[in-house]
Amino acid sequence: MPNVSNSTNEFATNIATNIVTNIVTNIVNKIIRPDVQALHAYPVQDAKGFIKLDAMENPFLLPPELQDALAQRIAKTALNRYPVPSYAALKTSLSTHFGVPEGFELSLGNGSDELISMISIACAKPGAKVLAPMPGFVMYELAAKLAHMEFVGVPLNPDFTLDRAAMLAAIVEHRPAMIYLAYPNNPTGGLYDVADMEAILHAVGDTGIVIVDEAYQPFAQVSMMARLPEFSNMVVMRTVSKLGLAGVRLGYMSCAPALLQEFEKVRPPYNINVLTEAAVLCLLEHAEVFEQQAAQLRANRRELAIQLSALSGVEVFPSSTNFLLIRVNHPDKKDDFGDQVFIKLREQKILVKNVGRMHYLLKNCLRVNVSTLEENAALLKALQCGLGDALK
Image 1 (cartoon, helix red, strand yellow):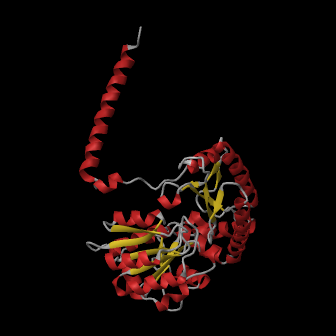
Image 2 (cartoon, helix red, strand yellow; image 1 turned 120 degrees about the vertical axis):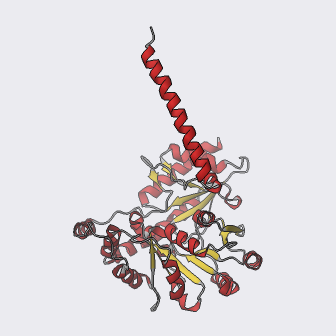
Image 3 (cartoon, one colour; image 1 turned 135 degrees about the vertical axis):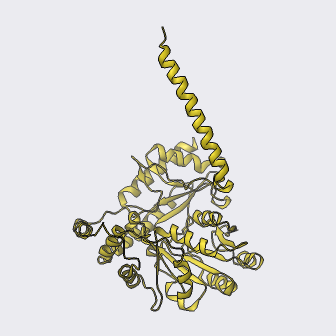
């Protein structure tokens, strides 16, 4: 005979669960903004068991002697105390190592994502707009929407260069409070023409600010940082993530002192924890290690681009980052060929970023991390197999 007691308990549990679910649904509908409900959380793929080539990370671990130095520094960190809110020592070290012009200060964020949010909050006057070339970093649009700002995307040219005329026309039409220029751009990997950027800075004038996002500067080896004194409306933003310190989550930005002072007002107190501060101070004393790693990745990028270009059906776009954007295509296949190749790579435990549905210009495109020679070889082998399987 069936256990009546268990069946009754299960029935009661299901009723209670449904009641709670309905209550929570009512709460969400009543208090959560409709536009937030319509959003999707930032997607992060589960990388367990995969060769991880989807997040533009530095693949190299710290050398043993640097691990020991870091461990000693962390062990002496006063975890019982809040950070010193000025972060003076950390700012001085960052400024010295990364060429911040004399007379310019820094504002720090928990990664560049927090800096983007801070700027958006500070500039979110009623009716304010944000403008950026597309495709670009997804957080520009997301932060704008969360701050109740209208986002205007201006398509790049088919070769992923800036459409200068379209950008200038959009500035005249929309008078944006903020413009983002990723230098180099993610997910396309290329550098915008400096003359185009200068034209945009001059066109904006004193009606807005232009945020030059230099997250990939260690691999581009060019920068607008030294030109901050020339442009009062320019903000230069960077992160130490791509340098090899993604796990510590530290971003920094600089601009005209009076403007930076306003951004500081919306920075959360103690937003950089003492472990991050101690780690970065320690590791910047050995900055040559990360410079050597960046040089190695630049060399690996050149070799990987050549090898990928040699594969039938693969188009490789120029890159000044630690990733390559590739397009996989075949005349007899549908528009979802990139999706098919992505799935085949996953089946072989290779994780890349499928950007094909982000924007129409990225049809059948995948973004692949430049990694160690061993992981790059694994990618090439898997891609050869994946292209072959997808073509069947």
